[in-house]
Length: 152
Length: 405
Image (cartoon, rainbow over the protein chains, first blue to last red):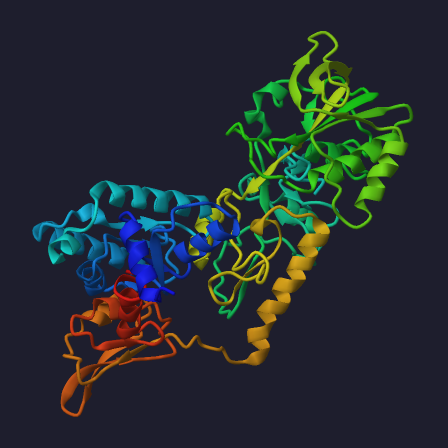
């Protein structure tokens, strides 16, 4: 009988590269929108793992950099539409931080398309699916993150 | 009222009846008092004279005033607008005199309405003997002009209208053009059968076009009878469009005042479609009635009672339960820079002197736990309860480093 790790490494060998994308979504809009997409049985690629925060304003630039350092191929921040933030203006502050991180990524030679901020409201299940599909498509086109490539 | 010289169209009767500049909105209005339309009033003072020096109930110099009321809970029950059905040009509303909406029909058939309850054709005042009802007028419409949703109560009121016609005008035949009859409530299906037995004719098919006979002002209704699978050209005296409903024009303004979102079709969004249908994501704000989505009177009353009960809970509790999500300052790390203080939308943060150092202090009751301060703090000195940096980093690590390779 083969050990679990053997099976796992065998599987890893056969497996083609799949993007690892981290999503950080706000509790009130995008998380609920993703829930609606699930409840509505809308199909979308499974490559984005989401972390729930109360507001996109909670996202720390370091979380994004940490994710890329850990080998994420993409990061998605998704919150409410401007003006709809449950906490009035958290998404504006997140957007400001997003531009800062994007500038930083460009200057260290990391394609800034790997990091994206989107706005999906609680009633936009179909839009959530479209956003995820598009994010996964972008990351697939960009290929594996250069940070993981360097590590090999 | 007799003495008032200014005459305006009566809005409640959809302009089908005149009213004076001083008027009672409609007979059932509560409280039953007169009001003055100051947009029309010429301030001649004849009404003041007619009222007499003893009563002095009219003051023409009163000014509008904004009244501030301090409340803890709010129920939004802002209702709906009727979809402008003239946008569906094929049915000719506003082009043909004898095409009316259900609301106009409702006033015409009402005993206290402009005709005293006699249904008449607007073109010649004759009693119609063939009346076509067009259901789903603008509802369940994916052309982009109408509304994609079902307005829910048009089927039932159109059945009622058919019943009223049969009852009031002997020999008059209602023809109901429908897609589906949605008689979904308690005893509603039985009512549908009753109308069928009373002699109303049901034609399953969407009305493609309505044309007017210019001489008689009669209308030709063109549809496809999908049950008999053949086209229909029916000449009728009057067409009643059961127009769709849509969210109030100022919904966006209202919802932004209260921090409530809306669903894709524009109705206000409830906190949860099944588990919290009266609440919103803003604490203390509740929804009742059609502003949350199309519903008929029983459903509206039920939701209103639910919203009223939900709104009374915090009133009777006398205190508010807070979510356990709030920021805390790690004082050893805090440099007292004060960057977070301006970020907080709730002014929950302030700088204080503690043991000779300037540190940030959180007023927990004000903090809603959004974490905007925690995401920004350059020193990592803010601990967000339940969404702390180590917790989020652990989640990132679990996804990217641990588990699957």
